[in-house]
Length: 124
Image (cartoon, rainbow, N blue to C red; front, side, top):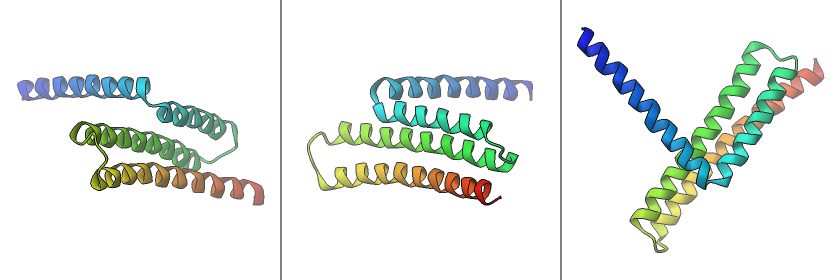
């Protein structure tokens, strides 16, 4: 049992290392990730500044993180497509467009959540 637990802890440690490397690589090369990070920081600040319920605040924060995750997935898709097929191809375009649509839908979900929360504050 101790051996198994040690192996799992090492695995979690390596997962953290790989995740951090992925974040740093994307941060260095993807302006969209930096822009969404700034938007997420402003959104989080507003979520803590406004008189929101814990559930509303959690929703806003979680959707912001999911938006960043979608942007990272889009970056991964684009990187793999560029590696496999550097020239233009309809399937490559489809994969990239679907990744972009994923980010757009996550952003739309976050925007809708903000609209509903702000409407609730306004109508009281």
